Length: 378
Image 1 (cartoon, rainbow, N blue to C red):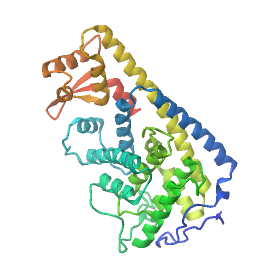
Image 2 (image 1 turned 45 degrees about the vertical axis):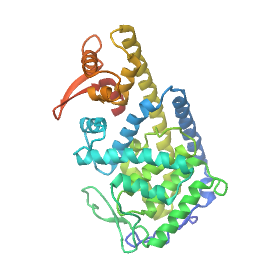
Image 3 (image 1 turned 120 degrees about the vertical axis):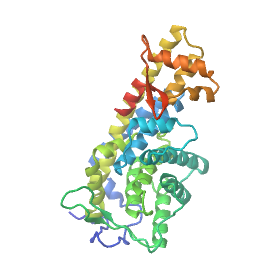
Image 4 (image 1 turned 60 degrees about the vertical axis):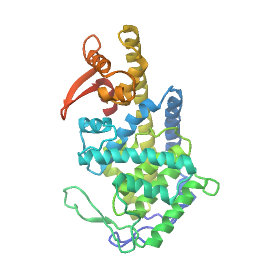
């Protein structure tokens, strides 16, 4: 049924230059189901934030969690990489990987941190933020879509509707800029737009995808945008909400609900979907953080009690910062000499420890933190 409170896109093959500016009508948000879902998602997110605060040095864990977010987000775009390729590339200090799909994942991770620092510096979102995210993800100097660049969103897969146009975003450089400026005002100004930040995030994500301001990469930029809204609104100190995994597992529903807003004005299903994504992802992240912290604590205790290793805390930190560890990670940081680092890593592969697994990849020895990698992949 058509929602009279929201203008819809009557012809999906024609550029939707009548896309509504924000905000949406407040009556759409005054729904008991939406409010109930909002309470549940805020509770789960608050619990996750509390856990992050309690971790002595969350930066040790965050990089690997962000890497998994990057991996899932790129898989939504049908870009896949293996764990070996991913962590091998991540562990190569200042060295580009030659694996194309792995590069995409690492660029996504780079964009998350670059955007995080950008917003912390200027304390708001701006057009430069969107450009930085896009150019970092795609490693391009291209900018917003120019007036002649008309794009179509087509049905994926191999089914009978594969290749069919499902949406045509607005066209025209001035219109795209005006829509983006309106979106930025909506996200930045909490005095005028007094909407709960989780609802604001869900609405902003839809609006960004509907504007589709770039020739390519909009999905990934939009998912990074989600993470940064949560950190900017101080709902999370670090980008640890693993939202892309839920979207990947419910990919058809994600795209169906996006289309539901443009085709039927069905904001309710979209908002309920996003709130459920936040709730489930926050609960999963909370459990994962607990398991990782417990694992790190157990490994630290065992290594300290063994009295076989000097600087045990530095040793443990490194095998969690670099799940696929190399001798040079220790020598470059001046933690150990080369022979000492190799001896310690080899020893952790043996009984009674069996904490690491030695793998030969592309002619180099990597020492894999087995249980940590397993937890990250679950």
